[in-house]
Image (spheres, rainbow, N blue to C red):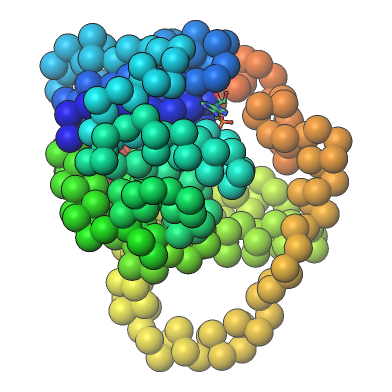
Length: 306
Ligand SMILES: NC(=O)c1ccc[n+]([C@@H]2O[C@H](COP(=O)([O-])OP(=O)(O)OC[C@H]3O[C@@H](n4cnc5c(N)ncnc54)[C@H](O)[C@@H]3O)[C@@H](O)[C@H]2O)c1
């Protein structure tokens, strides 16, 4: 795949565009918001800086990215279109319906949905075999995995082309074998998040201490030893003994905890609103972004033995 279009230049789009360009693809970007398109230049350049720090060779990729204010121009002749518009089923279906009429039959239509079933996104498409999930992880220019998810009607050839394209840009394709909501990464993350939110809500631990416990405990460890390998490291007999009394104690709530809903109702949305669980000044936000990117880059380089 040589020519890619990225639709949606919000949180995910700029980093995705930069990564695809750095991987040697020609990238055209589109957003319905002129402001988002204008802001994306700075975000793409920031992502290139991080890719430099990761040691990804630059072959003049900035010239390979262009912005378009027309969906039609943006996707004309594309081999791959990646949609990364907000997580709303109707919006994504409407966009995929438009794309269906604008691209060639060989063009792959990929969705960066966090977990809407791909089978739902294939509904109404004249060529559902080319619709596939391509779930990037945030920040997309730093985290090296992409989940590849086939819907009921995705053609095996589309899966093969997507896996090859991800390898072509030096990232790690993760094949998800069943189109379950949340795929794999978010099912695991949300299981952890539900328990963490519950522990803080119940006063078992303070928010700061919870983060320390998870980041320096399982977080640090899991980056080196994955959960299945960890079972072998700890011993399956130990897992069985602990899980036999602990599994029934863990949170199973089906709704969202008041710790979250009370804050969202007040507009406390996190960094984007200046406060969520914690509070942030504008200076702290920019320092945090830089410091986190630096630490993620350093950790990734160490894990990759660079
Ligand atoms: N934010 C994350 O951490 C993350 C991680 C992985 C996947 N995702 C998924 O990626 C997708 C995008 O998430 P985001 O966080 O970047 O959202 P966002 O709200 O930050 O950005 C979405 C962008 O899409 C634009 N847009 C809206 N409708 C459009 C349309 N019809 N055509 C073109 N552009 C349109 C908006 O103007 C906005 O700039 C979602 O499906 C989300 O679930 C998000």
